[in-house]
Length: 429
Image (cartoon, rainbow, N blue to C red; front, top):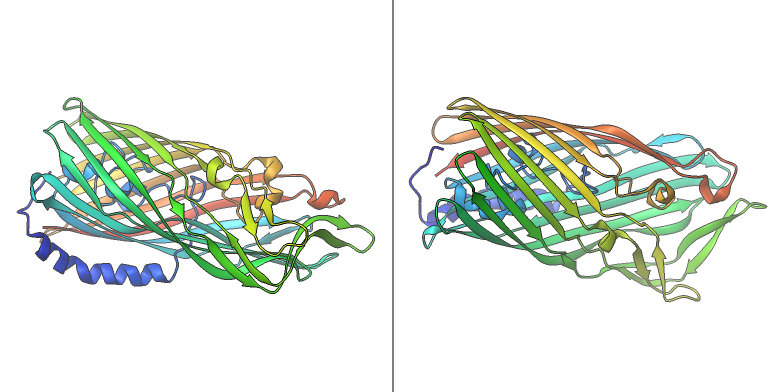
């Protein structure tokens, strides 16, 4: 790997500051994303995306701080900025025919950096990332229950200052302090009556990541990381009234359910803990094959969405999302065709965390895609610059439940596929 003379942290920060301000401005606009792994991206940054997310044992850029901070100690001093155009395609059927989401294009930014610090075997890095999220915007007029409106927006942004210590040429360990902000709003109404928390609410969370890398020999590198559950402050909405439908009055075709009065409503949405193990193989000088397995504890954070507020007769309402824990498999291959050109291909498969019997409760949160393929490349440019690109496609998956409120309607169904294209510019110090 090509290396360059290191510079002082003060000089490094002076170069990173304009980029940091730019990314913070982008993040402030709210980058809503979808992903194969529930509402988590396959990979952060275009190198990880090109490798199908299989980078816990094969760090390739400073974005490794978000997946395995130990990887910082295996990188040359560098910074990287990534921008991704994300295109999720979603269709829902509430029982009256398919309707598509009217918002389908999102921008996902990321910034990362890494450099030695204090002494040769200590490394500092981190970044600011749009890492996950979801959102839909459905409108279906002219039904017997009036106009059906279904809207959701979950924006998740993370900052992860990280440090790594390299014991020797074989073993390193890294830790990251994960700070995050999330913006959440929901709306699902029938004829103007329903569950409406559409005013965006912000919450802030904290967690941590620890990772290790071990170079078993010249052909095999092993990696592992653990990301704790991120604990968030409460979300708050001030609303005039709320209504959670639980059934239907067939004589009037009006929903029945739990009523809420004017006042303050609150909820908490933590981010799940997860574990990743991986191995990178180098069967030839120019070839890297990286594999990874992840476990994401969605059931702990997405089993129920509990909303406290001035409900009539009850102190809270628990929306039964019932997400299941998810196992994810990732595979990536990199081929260095020359000293200045690298090619990548990746594959990711994650089990759908939403069972078909729970699809009715997740029509505005259809994180159901399972299988994705990726391709990418890096060009090393003059003057220590590099350019990395990646594309992704996840294949359409459809989940069908019963009929809405047991009415003699078409089956409730969600369908989803995804596309993305991203570009990343890097600079080596």
